[in-house]
Image (cartoon, rainbow, N blue to C red; front, side):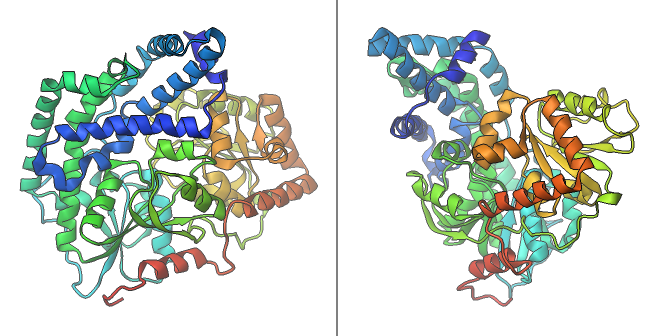
Length: 534
């Protein structure tokens, strides 16, 4: 099986036209699931809300079918028979995905935890003289850009809507608690009853329509349903009911808060898409303020969800704008190159003498990287410390077995990584956006790519040229130790490295001369044409 996976990694990819055609086949199949949704839910556009999660995270179907088309294209060059090529490719995919994918899909159920109590007690009162800009997110990693905007904004009409399961996240303590609205407080008894009833209803729909669903996912006369059955079942049992819950709760929020615009950071999750969709239905402007990069080709947008029916997207650079414009399936009224509240060029001097910490911004499943860093530390002067910032949502206990030295410290996942920059001499990461923020602080930042699984993501997110890759990307332990030693020992090498970092940033990010220029421009766009008092 490992040999088959390696073959899959090296075969020629589809060209853009074939890749888009494959993706559109999957979208077309999933849209047919709408025929099974009862008419009473038609006003919610549930299929639009669940679409990216259904073809992506919950089933992996988009990637499976893309790989099938790639394999068929390559096999056909050998056996010169189209249908036989497809048949061989289908059976290879079945072998590769049989147990691995099923196990992963089994765990993809509800998008987030709900804390339900009878609504009303925690809602608070909002001024009737203000039209609010509602920022929303249901993941810790999404919060930073929104919180930074609120901190930098001079506007008084900002509210942040988050689920209660995030209430103890450190970054929320950095803004006035009056600006925080808890999503769960707007779940009424009636909404929760509808949600619970829908779980039973859609479980029954799945079980009584399995044959019809199987036919929907019969493509090229092959039974792809068998590969994704567990995921599709979870779509009906969990994803659709939560989409109903989210949509109805957003409606309830709109009844109690006068809203000028809604602003999210992603377009994949059903929480986000419920806000966008409900806002559209009520004539409220909807925007996306990007929290991360969106890659270097439209395949990445396929995986993260298309920018559908949005009033606007706030992007970092002309390159991001062009990427969205080139995506045939995205539909945005305006794309604004505003830069981002994430990126403010530091005005502080880089005082190296007091910085003795090497900060690692962790990822999921990064034990290989952590082991390499610990070996590196054993070869450095003992005065230096390694701070391992655990990725949000990752179990801290997974790292404890690695940490048996005094100069290695674990930072819990719910802490704000950027708060540790003031003591950081070097930042190391796999693919984290923290590298860009550290670069802006004048902190040398390097990308650790000793594991092949980061290679594609690194190139997709940062699109290094050959010189940049050689400068910033580390591919083995020997190179890592050499790079770190040079950065620690030579001021001349360090200054040259930092200078190259700023050149790297200038190609990728629109920066303002005004310290909070991005937040100011975004705020003016959001409130353009607003009639409430500010």
